[in-house]
Length: 382
Image 1: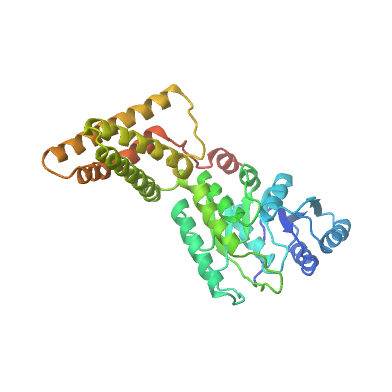
Image 2 (image 1 turned 90 degrees about the vertical axis):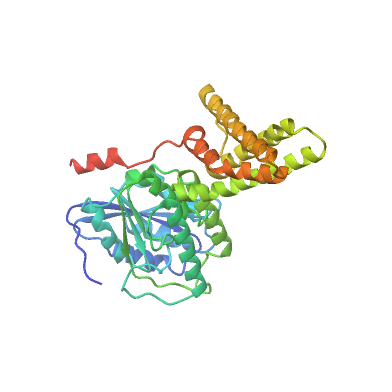
């Protein structure tokens, strides 16, 4: 691997989450310490996540030997995300990097990833195990396929074109990563970080790295449970800020379910002998309630927030306008001889896009995010 020179004095904080890594921790730390040079000083923050083996003792010994090493401990095991949260909060370097405690990643790559940050071309640099000509160990086709699927899904929601969203190596300006509230405790932290970084709209670079994967027998911990959680995290942390086409696809489910509720309740009311002039608005307002709740929990917001009388007024106004259109379309189609359920179905579908646009731009308005201007501008002025 070619030598990379850092052009000015830099302090890099490297956060290492550690859980039962006694077989690799010491060599990992020696490799990390090996990237120091005249312009690159290190702060190595080991967060021991309540290891049950000798990891803590090894970390204590090395912390006593090297002034660069800071050891933090969790009294109970929480997971990689929780360890990173602790490490990020305690970082003091100009830049912050993530390093796993195993030997899958080569710390020399950190210097390469650091260059766009030091040159003030990037605010975040992500590694990629696939965007590279460097050596990498060949393992687990289905892991690779799962990773590609998760990366594709993440890209759809974030509007980024990454090749390896799950890659451990992620470097940040400290102000960026400390501004992010890490909520995930386990491996879901990877898509969460990518989601929240993308919403800040900093300058993001991606660079290829070498990779030496380990087997489960050698200590690999990630599993299918974490893959399922990653799917949830991609949806949960991105949906309210996703690009228009993705949000509309999600709303097709929300609106479709609401439309079925609308049609179904109308049919039950109508066959029960209730007059159409009553059945149509009652069914519509029931569906509108279901639609609102699904929008809150799945798409635009995670909690109902009636922040002002203006918001309440707009929501009621939108429901009334759409309800009027729904009623008029249903009534007129019925009057020209169409079956009532057909008339109601056409009306429900016809107001779907109108409903989506009204909720997105008038009811559930999201504050604009990024670009990450104040910090970037101050750095460029230096």
